Image 1 (cartoon, rainbow, N blue to C red):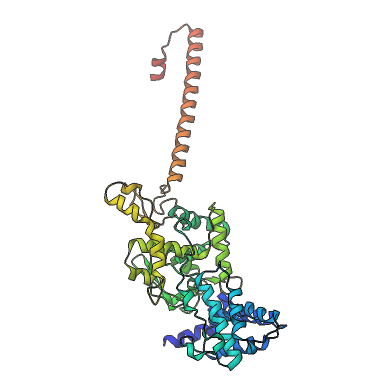
Image 2 (cartoon, rainbow, N blue to C red):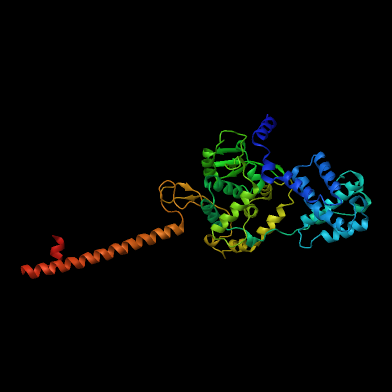
Length: 432
């Protein structure tokens, strides 16, 4: 039943993965750009064979995008891939590996070189796990060697603070034509630690509301995600679904584009986050994936590794070490706090956002709400300070007006006394 509905939804709304990433279009662009290559036919057949082997469009693009650089290297030396020697492959391998590349990027090029040369010589794509399946010219390549190289994509100081996150949420209405849709999208992506592609692949059937919590699941890089509880994004998400043009259709994509009549693109989401960060006055480099890094690092500080793994949607625990590394800088602060060297109220290291409870009426409000949604009292400290200053200015202005009226009254009383010859004390006049 689930697969049948998924198939119907794909027919009705199209392939969300292709609409978001446009992998097939990008693959065709790569092949078109290599039409003048002496190895064009080898690359084209290699891509076709990968598709026939059942690799996803994303995985096929993974190989095709790296093939271009490899093929151009052989083209310059007028060497066909099927005629490449072991020495050719070693020289190519050394030159295409940029020392500034991260380990996974190096592994990607190594894996692509190994498979495409093997295919050009045998017509087979080879099994990734067995070196004996590859021809001698590339059998020596060990991509896994680079997979294990760890270089963090971000440092702890690159992560967003709670104040910066709130300012991004608040800035969205200034940069979006549809803030009722775009604000909950960004809030959901952060709170659920979703990859950008995962948040965009959400369908309405993957959302359920329960006691002021939205349970949300999606599909992404490693398959279906576990349902994740969203609290601060719950109410904004609910409001968007009330306005969604297909809100009653379980198969409909959640983040619908009115312009393209399909799901929003990855490029749109990336631009939205950057524009909101710019409008919020944030100087550091901000991109969509940084929200995921920020959330996962905060989870690593406060929860067991298994919870972190579920939020990260990883099959194994390998990736956990990255976020444990990013949060390890808080060890010194934690020890200081244990021994009373840091006051709890002064500890602002956590990136967790919490609902604001109104001190006047008790209503819970979102972190970016400036006023209570029930009684209207100011929740934001800057707004409260501005209101207090305005009230103080008004009181000062009124006091000046009272002083001016008092002076005028005294002058009138004095004039009256001179005309009538009566001596009326000011206190008596005020009393009357």
